[in-house]
View (cartoon, helix red, strand yellow):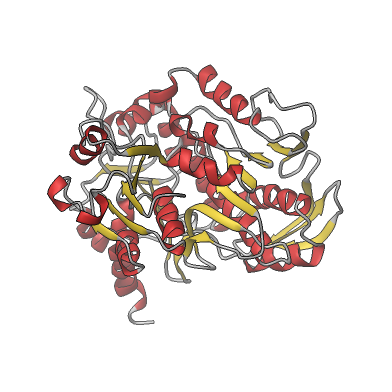
Length: 459
């Protein structure tokens, strides 16, 4: 990289921040803009990045105003009207999308890229942890904060393997060059970008064509797509109970989940999940498949799976007590909600589950309103927040009410974020879960404190 200065527009995004950390580790000067200050941007500043939160060219540090020595990195979520972005465009700077930059890193390494509508962050993190805890090791650019390491970036001075989350939004994953690709699902999403379900699936098929000759595709059994791989690429199937890689003799109880792996690369008995929820059996099988293909041993896999602590905001237990349980989860697609709700209800069959859901994007709400209502209706008690718009302008007639009207749960209500703490001070809860990919995470510490004060202060 010939540039000494790297400037990120949207530096606080989970995928941008790991690249920012990567270049900080390489001794580059790193700066950038983000819309709001978060724990992640605060951490980046402590690590040496220069970050500001107002879209103003006056706030760009002087060191980043030399077009010959500064690379501008941005994401497609940045609006075209962005002042700083347009200033850089008009003044001769080289601009590159985040995905393109990550793609360059994968091209020069042995990349394991994980794609899918659901589960890719957990599978990516599991894969990275399996490799990290083995003699193989890896670098990793993750879409979540891995709790074992409290970071979304892992660097190695001995491994050429790079684990990367392959984001399908805006066809970003078409920049990547995997040696091993995992596809966890291809359920339609981002129809504001793709237009049709067919176009969405074709984008995944294009991704499979990018696997390097002699590589591997680990494909969820039953995924509705037709791979377009090079003839030298080996295709492996997986799922919880079927496929080349699958589980048998699954045992659950006393807060533990244990299974035996059936694998063409060697069966492994008694694998214990560090995060013992049902969906992690399947997630774990995909990660183990990639690890086995990379040379990780049986004993290393068994140890790493049992020590995996999970990813922040992926089925994250904030409180786990007899008095009250609080779980925070990133689920923002109907199928993710259904899977998470089913897992929670199986863990706590005798308790009432209350869910707070913040819909993400007007377009996704419009496109999947019936599916959202069906998923949330699996619950007895639903609290619905307003739609988090992210990059979108409002769409006429699209509000949380169109989901609310279709929910059949015994108890349901719509609440503003401001009124939520007051509601939770009075509302009895046994198991509470917060769902969403917007800014609901900012409420999590307050909700946790409120529940601890209410239910655990006298214990």
